[in-house]
Image 1: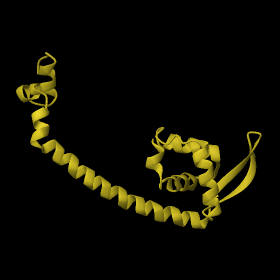
Image 2 (image 1 turned 90 degrees about the horizontal axis):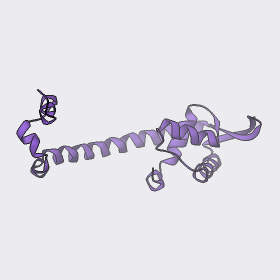
Image 3 (image 1 turned 135 degrees about the horizontal axis):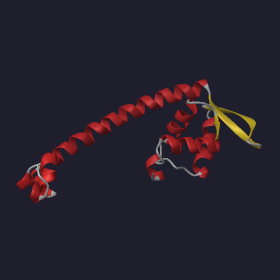
Image 4 (image 1 turned 60 degrees about the horizontal axis):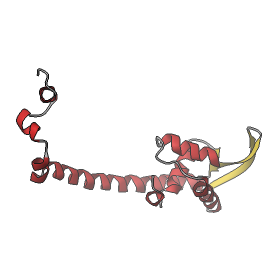
Length: 142
């Protein structure tokens, strides 16, 4: 996903991932990628500064630990981080719902428009729609 589209949402994503349990920075990167089916494959140069900034703001706390023989900083949410997550998630749901309503309405109008119907495949006008029409188009029996 383009970094430009993530602006303003990275904090929410990191807080959300950490709400499922503490972890080190690279683990946050792999969790984001896994939970988004690869859409949020973020570089370390994006995630680590955000984690440090969130820690500086008091939304995260960290401790040092040894994981797989390597010294790592383990991050976890603070109470302020939990409150920020709840607030940001509420704002995101309101925004997302509004976007869905606008996009859904415009998509519905586009499908119903005469311009859309004019560009449909002429074969569909002749054969109709649905599974039986598909079979007829493919040369099979309906």
